[in-house]
Image (cartoon, rainbow, N blue to C red; front, top):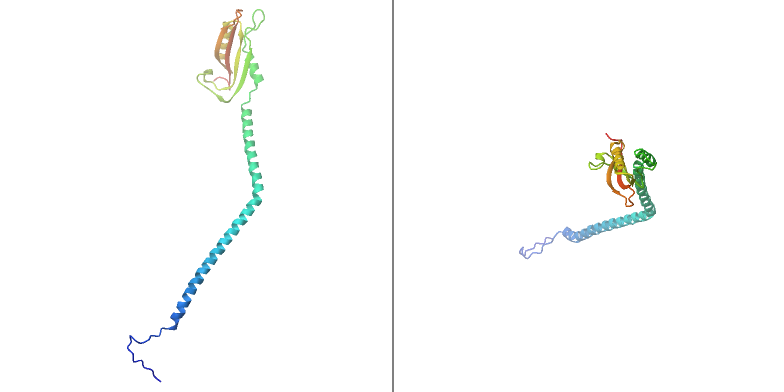
Length: 204
């Protein structure tokens, strides 16, 4: 039997292919599945990262006592290095004071006719100079490793002047004259003060 549709084309009912209906239903399902898969993978990635962070934090908590001990040891090591550095500076700047004072006493003037010292040391303050210093205004620019601040009495200005001249000519000492004045008891003696520098390596 043959069916002939005699209606005009504008009034005829069109029959669409069945696969469009399948696509209309399947496409939202596919898009939803893809979005669900992406969301699932994202959630899994976030969960794995959070688990890894928690694991790292647990490991750090276990290591914290050892890290604290290491920091403490490093602090002690730094303090020990500073002490060693100070000890090394003291060792390098050490002065054999006995030898220095003995050498200085050789420049003292002789005794008076009455057998009394013509010049004495009533005060002697010593200090090491480290690192050594030199100044054109002091000790004729020589490098100084130790200084003596000396004060005392002398029987006359001439004796003091002779003492200062001997130190000025010395190879191992230099002198800076401070002052001299007559004592108040009118016994003819003078008080004085000088600064004596120990020259490193002697004068050139």
